[in-house]
Length: 191
Image (spheres, rainbow, N blue to C red):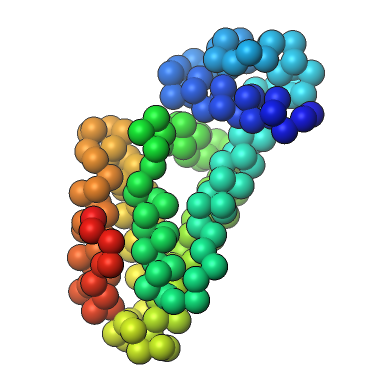
């Protein structure tokens, strides 16, 4: 399948998940969100589950792209990560992610992908914290504990945004305070 068709299908899947939720998601509803026909969806994906697995692969690829930071400075790497996580586009929402996370107890493939995302995010954070401690930029702390706390806060921010309408900036402020307390790190970017 060409990249343009694939991107249209993934965007349609995202919109349909946000609009209808997992329970009411059908291939027809996904196709209705796209200029791609239902027959084309079925040509590439035999089932909705296959499509959602491809959608999770798509989310993982986007996630990796957002985490990418070539900076060697640990402070800059953390700032880039927090900016990527907490500063999404206006038309972006974690609803689709929450819908699929809610299904992960029943779908091993979903759970595996979310474990992969969690592991990768904790790895990026712990690496930046470890490098900051080694370079003397940060106070001594347990990098894995700091990373676990931040990832837990990020997941909580998604739920609070979707369920309570709370802006992610509130959680970012709390994360910044935690980093200042644990690492003696003050943010360079205003939260």
